[in-house]
Length: 350
Ligand code: UDP
Image (cartoon, rainbow, N blue to C red; front, top):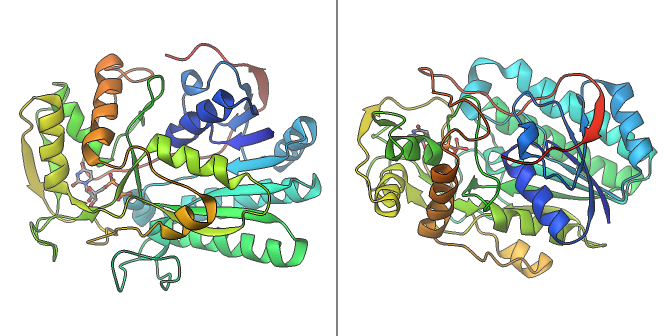
């Protein structure tokens, strides 16, 4: 199938592109490289540098590549940053996404796959979380993704657009070739592994007074390759709707740090910090619907396996795709959109 991938130079996008190419799909990556890395784009893909904010460019790129399916990863995706800069989230995740959607509708794209998030639910009434739970986001990131989910629903009803929106829980881990490298790293596992690599003196625990057994937040970590596999299944004709992607197991921040210590064989020191605004205490998926309807089955469900793949990649690529970035106090930022037009073949990945 001919697939157009926005955000294909980012963490999740790059690995999904790799998996698509491994199964002989043809892939065009559209990315502005503000958060993604040129070296993270598989050399077998066509690369188009551009911004979803540039309506003319995205229409042109879709018309030229004539995709049967669009997978839309490009987004701003940091809870913390969204609490200080909400406008960026509504601009990138809603307004810019509409340009892509309009271009896809005009070109009669057959399938639209969207990266949504468990942050659309807010703190859940029950665990594990099923897709029918009320969606009450407590941060602009979750709200912006929920808004785009609603746009998709109406485009399905009115234009017959077939879409799958995946509500990701916590994507983690790496493939052999591609891994997680954000210019400003705010995510737990890469930050903890930085300590194991000797690149940071300690990691930070954001909040130890949550209503959880050890007082730290609980998340459901899912292997990036399992996540990618779900997108491939979603492209089959007739697949339609909203799906959670997670393993159904929750791990606290302290448990993640312990697992990183076991996997790396290094001692990892951690300091306790106040809560990070916008973080729900506990998010754990039920992915029964994806398993039942898409035939999805995670191949790497254990936290140990997820962390081990991340550790292998970070040991092999201690600088990621470029200079090491550190985490300034209280900051967050992520995949965005914005930039110019350039088309070229991808270079070799790092
Ligand atoms: N977290 C932490 N220290 C860090 C990064 C994250 O304690 O350096 C916590 C964060 O507050 C959340 C969990 O780890 O409860 C997972 O955060 P992450 O940013 O990895 O993903 P999110 O759940 O926000 O998408």
